[in-house]
Length: 353
Ligand code: COI
Image 1 (cartoon, protein in one colour):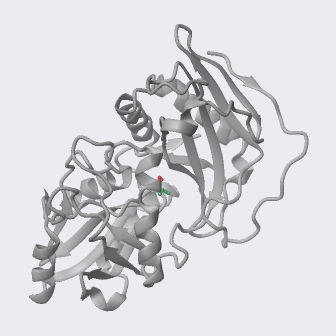
Image 2 (cartoon, rainbow, N blue to C red):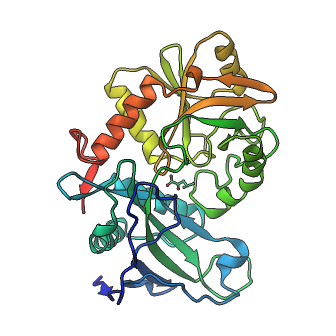
Image 3 (tube, protein in one colour):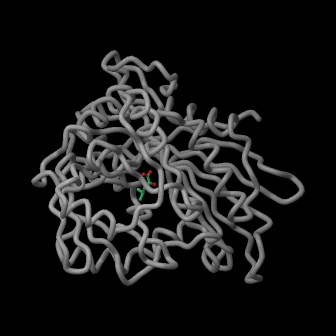
C-alpha cells in the first residue's frame, strides 16, 4: 500500500543528555492506519505527532480491546540505525491480535512502515550510552458501540520515544517483591498477549511494593500462587548452582524477544539452561543452600536488569551482595553490543533501517 507522508511544520527540541526519563518524550511524527470491516487496513500515513479525536463510545474506552508492542532503534557508531529482531515483535503483535479478536496485520508491510517512520525520525535516535529510540506500535478499537463484542473499526498507530533505562538506576540491581496477594494472569487468560489490562491490573500491587522500596513485583501463577511467572515489565532468570533456570512459557507468561535472545545466547555459550516450572519455595531453598548465584530480568525496555534482592512473605533473598552478577553483565554486554552494531551479529538479529 502506498503511504502518505505529511511533515511537521516545526520540530521539537531533542534530549541533550542520557538522562531521558522512560516514555515521556515523543518525536515529531507518528504512523497511523485505519481498519474497517469489509475493507481491511487502509490509509497508511505518517503525520505530525498530535492528539487524536475519538468518539466517547469508542470501544477501547469501555472494554479495553487493544494490543501493543515495544521494540527499539539503536544508533551505531557510524551514524546508522538498527532495529533488534523486529520481525519477532510483528509476529507477537499478531499473536496478541488473535487473542484479543483484533484483525491481523500484514507483518512485513507494517514493519516497512515502522522503518519509514524511524528513517524520518532518525535524528531522534539518541547516541548517549544506555539510550535508544523506543518504538510503540499499538492498535485500539474505535467503533462507537457499547455492545460487548469485537469492534468493526480500529486504528493502528506507532509512536516513538527516545528513552534512557527503564529502571531509573540503570544497570544497578533492583529490589523486587514476590507478589502474594494479587494475580497477573491465569492459563487461558490474556497473560501471553501484550494487552493493556495485563499492565494496569498490576498497578495496585506495584504501588504497594514501591511503598516498601521495591522497584516492581514478581508474579506467581494465579492458581496455586506457588510457581514463578514474570515481573510484568520483564521475564525472569535465575542462575542456580551453575545452571540457568527460567519459568517455562505457561500460557500466562509473555514470550519476550529478549527472553528468547538470552536463551539462544546461553545455548551458544554452553551454559546449561532449564525452562521449567520453578516454585518460589524451591528458589528459597536454593538460596538457603547458598546456590542462588544470580537473578536478572530480560525485556525490551528493561534490557538485562539484575535483581539484587527478592522479598517473599517476610523472607529476604539477597543475591550476589546486590551487585551486578557476571552472567547478567555478559548478557547485557553481548545483547547491547549486537543492538549497537559493536559486536558481530552472527544470527542476523539486527536489521538496518
Ligand atoms: C517492553 O519491554 O517493551 C514493554 O512493553 C514493557 C513495558 C512495561 C514497558
